[in-house]
Image (cartoon, rainbow, N blue to C red; front, side, top):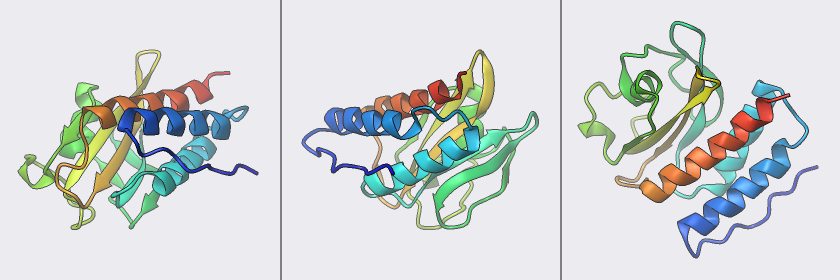
Length: 162
């Protein structure tokens, strides 16, 4: 059984280094994309302060489809031309949105969400989906979160390799 340890909150980089180490331990030896996505979403949900949603959308070749997550029920399908998730997927660039109400085309799955970070999941040049985290706090995410979330997503992507 995996037991998450308390994480240092002295600095975001230190917090993310510890969270990444926990994710590596949690996903070690498992290669199933759904199982690892579910466990990573649960780990992030427990560890990240001031969030109200954390999870995956997987690309099915046409659109993003809801995967494992923690939080309120969410939008099931997202077109690549819509919202923060669609922007991250189509541009293949992490999106850090300080105020979702100022983002053109934002999809409001949870009215309480005020800021968002979305990391595209790309492996061997192929879009697999996105990692999406929302917060009820305006400006919750910054460059330290961008780097930390990208490192967390790399742990997930590495777990899929056989």
